[in-house]
Amino acid sequence: MNDDDTGTPGRTEAAALALRPLTARSIVLSTLLGHHPPRLPARALVRVGELFGIAEGTVRVALSRMVAADDLRQADGSYALTARLLARQARQDESRAPRVRPWGGDWEIAVVATAEGRPPAERTALRQAMAALRLAELREGSWLRPANLDRTRPAVATEQCTWLTGTPGDDPAALAARLWDLTGWAARADALTSALERADTLADRFTIAAAALRHLLSDPLLPAELLPEDWPGGQLRVRYAEFETELRELLRQYLADESTRQAG
Image (cartoon, rainbow, N blue to C red):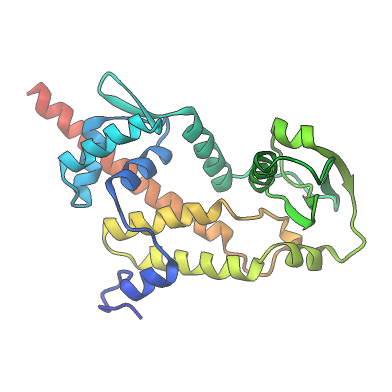
């Protein structure tokens, strides 16, 4: 039940979903991460902020700070993502349209060559790489997942691990349920999908869509044979794509109107 029964996510629902509040920085970042190519004129980013009640000056201050923090680069009145955030956009794109292949039952297994004595920075970098590759840790130094994804392994993963292919002796569906919290992931995906369907303001949809995209980054992208029935990943992707199309059309219309005004 919403706080106001209007169909938009109320404060109670927002708290339950742990939605991050809208800020000028989050609006700019989410807009560029969802835009291809990830470059927009300052006036377009200002307009997005205005759609959510954020003043032009506040957006422009956020843009300056993001350039100083190396989140954005600025040229000719436009702002674009830097290399670090381009990598994040690539991960988000993959989560929305994963490159999968038919699964024959094999699993990819990574065994860390030197599980002990590695500097903390190396351990952290490897864990981040394994999460991006959507592997789960069975035990210290042993990572695995079904071999159904096509993606490139980064150097940190190939240099620190020995990679094998095998078939676990355990029931694969039971093993997958042990490695990933499939029930928890599905419950949050259902809640986000439902919230997106009910939201009737752009600000609500933007906030929920940003949370949905973050959630999709943690989708293990397992073969259908290993997933519970009615897995909600596909439906959440559809709802997010609908919102992205809506926002892109709003920006296109605004920029077209702005160009017409300037020409006149």
